[in-house]
Image 1 (cartoon, helix red, strand yellow):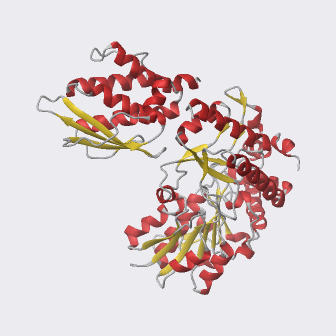
Image 2 (cartoon, rainbow over the protein chains, first blue to last red; image 1 turned 60 degrees about the vertical axis):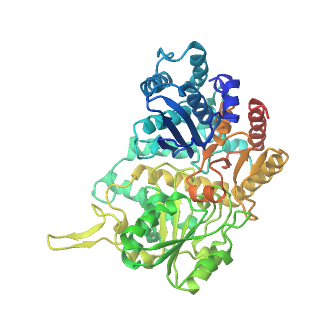
Length: 154
Length: 405
């Protein structure tokens, strides 16, 4: 167990001052996520342009430092990416949090990957993994137009 | 009272958590178990096991006696008039579901009201919610005041001609507020309304006297009373248990079964269908004996000292905000730290071996009212010491340090 690895400066910074914490004007996709065990809530807003590129992404919600930082970093990294690429990044991140050592996608550059890997400290805290993955699952729901609230317990 | 020697009776404290001594401040969630309770389960299964109330062989008779002994112990412990007023359930949740279901079936009609409070645990709201759909009833909520209390006046205000039952907690698992149960019961009875008390937090920490409280139903959770999981108690006045229909059907709860009709068993068998949590019930007797040996007066005094000491230390910390300020408060402190989410607090405290709860504590109604998505909660048990409180406070300081506050 290593608290320093979990609460790295970058996590604390994004947790305290989350980027993209707002509501996108004219969004065309959105989804809500909820973690019933913690009470964490997130609402993801997505604007895909005609070329299926993420023109804007934002979120509203409340939660712990890990869940806020995760949503903040995620929205930063997928902005400007194509829908197909976003799906790949999401899967890669979820695989890494679950079992894999690192990130394998070819979409993010090294700096971006390093930033994302800051969330890997959560792997040592099984009860907190859901905090890190809530916004990612919710993003998947938004892209796929799932109507139900994404629930970490389902 | 020698807390250190009481603590030694709980084997869990022989273990280290992340190389630290365990500081267990989550007893409102579930309490730890003394050795006598753990050993009793082992002994029953290894030397005395049989199903109860059915066969006539030696083991069955012995097991039945042991099982019924717990019923008598509980009866005495809570000062119920009759041992048949003690029904074993799988927990307080099932006890409340039993009442909501059977009372609802028999007495609730379209438009009737059930009065609960904003302090209720989900287990004293959701069972009544089922009746909204099946019976089209309404649920009214008595509201908390600024101190997080439910006053008698507020209950009075919310009672209408349609109120058919009042169901309230004895002691809030979030604010620690102790409700004026006797006064609520007197008021309700003057209007012919029965009262159910959710005693999950009351039973382990307050003196229980059903004759003094006068309530119609009292739900108890075994695992919060230093007993095993999977066991709870519904105390109900005999007139209700005779009057209400059975809750679950099966073996053990019947008298005569024919193709054309069924008659039900005598109390308390009528409400104990199927093979019960026999070993747990028998071990629960040891929890009662354990509590009796220490003495509830001593427990109340000890937990009050811990509460006062924690409030004193925590109030010196400007970043800590305590939820609610009830005048009559049990050993539960819910709090927030400005700038640190409760889940982060819980993870950081855990590294020091300090076990607390973070979240809404199964009280979403209350948290919504307080406009708090989550709180951190420290709750006490008989094994806690002043050193535990000091460790809590120093670990809280560590949270602030990690979050650069």
